[in-house]
Amino acid sequence: MPDFIQSWAPLLAILVSALGAVAIVATGEKRRNLRETWTIIAAVAKFGLVLSMLPSVLAGNYPEVKLMQLSPGIELALRVDPAGILFALSASFLWILTSFYAFGYMRGTNEKKQTRFFAMLAVCLSATIGICFSANLLTFVLFYEILSVATYPLVIHAGSEKAYRIGRQYLVYAITAGIALVAGIALVAVAQGAGSAEGLAAGALDFTGGGFLSPDLSMGMLWTIFICFFIGFGVKAGVMPLHSWLPNAMIAPTPVSALLHAVAVVKAGVFGFVRLVGYTFGPDLTGAMGAAAMLAAFAGVTILLASAIAMTKDDLKARLAYSTVGHLSYIVLGVALLAPHAILGAAFHMVTHAAMKITLFFCAGAIYVHTHKKKVSQLDGIGRQMPLTLFAFGVGAVGLAGVPLVGGFVSKWYLAQGAIDAGSVVFLVFLLLSGLLNAAYLLPIVVRAFFRSSPEHTRFDEASPLMVVPIVVTMLLAILLGVWPDGIFRFFTLSEMIVESVTGTAITALGGS
Image: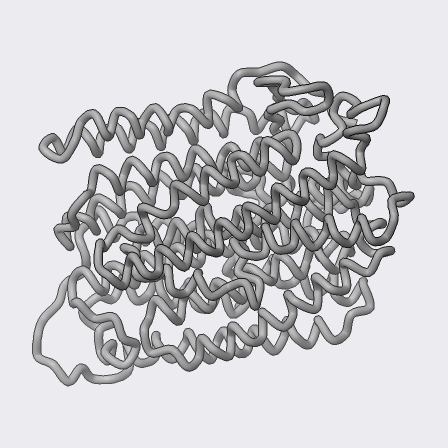
């Protein structure tokens, strides 16, 4: 059993980028260098605070702080556990790289409203870290809704009629998800004793490894709660048919796409499923009521359909967007299979997918800024002119396909092993087939870039160092996660700790149960 230690570090990790957002707004458009300095200071400080809590979590001492008690049993509180710090380390580290990349991108495209852009980016990361460190359902949903609201100005950043139309669609999805989550929390509170003579006990809504909901509740109540949260988390996680907003949101600048698809927003949705299955219902109850089978079915169908749709897209960012839809459901499927190795693969895929997908989006943005090309069909021969960028794209592509020596192989290996352990041959076939589809829609881009001749005679160079350096760093991270899974911030050990807290099964590093 872990020990809990009082610490203000979780709250400071949330507040630092919110304060950074205030400084960014106060600086304004005229002092661009100072504005960007505030962005980096906030990003580095946030990452430093998150990293400072890692040794305690690895030692079984979880920092926590109670912020406010709204009524007996209902409070806002923060707690740093292995699941939360795994997500927070990934998000905060990649935010530093995204910030540098965004400087190069926004300058290269001469985007308007850059102050609002960087401020809302900072608010999004504050909300994301709040989600990571939420100790209970109420705190989680509060930060989840803040993230939904803060994302809207980024989605409509272009200011065009199309951007506002897509923004309205995003709001419809976000509001629907929010209503579902509030209903779900209300039902959980009732199930835990709200309204009864005894009332809610202290910590009644706290996330607990193995779940806290009683199997004695009626099946109707359990299913209603589960469906509410399925809708609420499924929207951000892009589970079909709740995914439509996500590919459309590609109208936003590429750094936003990287934020949406790799770092924060959609990962908040799949992290919600981790909390739902692992820490609210628990694997035993989720399996017994049949919800795991339903969740696995939705995830499996999403994996295959999204991969198939990605193959039809000529727009590079749209292809990557549907790739994201599919890969998010890898994580959902791993959680739904309930087997220890599947949950291990799901947790680790949160990190490996982030590194690989952000590399691909960074590459897509660099290509656009320096060539104004958006279509896959326009990329003939571009690898000879931007070799480093397209090589990094190739690394991300083979990683998503599950090729060894890149992080995606490790997470997919454990997902496949988990499917075997669960006796789910169908989902094992889904995983193998989707890997082939990943290769089919990504690798031809690399082949086209390096082995075809460009029909144009225009000469392009690599993007600015502000964009290329983050691309190289995320590429190297993706490789390092494949050859030394526990070498960066102990991500693999944290994934093992998540498995043990949820299932009670200890898994040795890169070995068996």
